[in-house]
Length: 352
Image (cartoon, rainbow, N blue to C red):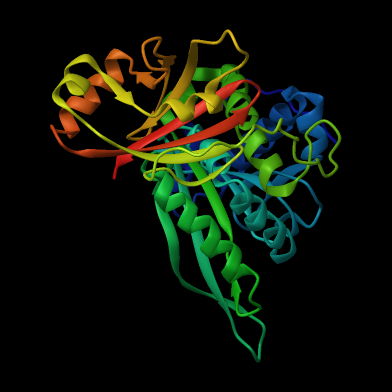
């Protein structure tokens, strides 16, 4: 493979794609994009290089790509498309066999799957497409979208329904449910970065790897299927009647808010819930992650009250402000608790 020095993607690379018929300019832009993708692949950590061993230029679509296979669309891929005003980075999973694994993986533990999607950040756009397969020709045509929007708008309840529906439909030979994640960068910003663009794009790719690993079961370190981590089982306990559908890794509870709760910024659970949070017999406080309104907050705490053993979630100032803006005296709030593994408890707060 011929190596090309890469010094950055200047604005002429992007403006070339706005000029109809200017083949010289387009050839220059394509050569610069090809130099970019070679340099990007070389700059990635070896495990990610192994996950995407194929990289190059597609002249037909005027894109460059990182791919897991020479037959690019038959496997996972990351594609880069330059336009006059932007450069789009897109992760695509379109192969039916891979999707038959990906959607059951996503619906197996929807809280963790939701976290992997939404932690990418609101700049990422998620599209879950529904394709209908013609019985006679076998060709797939667009039927609609199960979801289209910023991952920041993918709330927990929508995600649970989406993953389960996508898994169900993709298992039917009538449907194929591909998934696309895309991020647009302003072309002017890319041009100003010069060679630093490799670090910026490389970081975004690294952020994608946990999600790709979950969907495909592949480890970036080995390229092979990765077994789901085993979690330590907890002793199950019964809470009050409001507690729903609990297992050793999660529970859902509906609490009623009072003026003191809103003013002081806390939510009361039950004494029985403390077994879910405790680390050992001496544990009286525990840091928790709060997910609310598309935001992850890591400054809140679970407490065991010494007076009656009640479990109390003490909210950070930011979450307390959100609570006061969205709830009133007597309102009910749903708390969905989930053990994320590695010592992290996540609580999802929503209107009950």
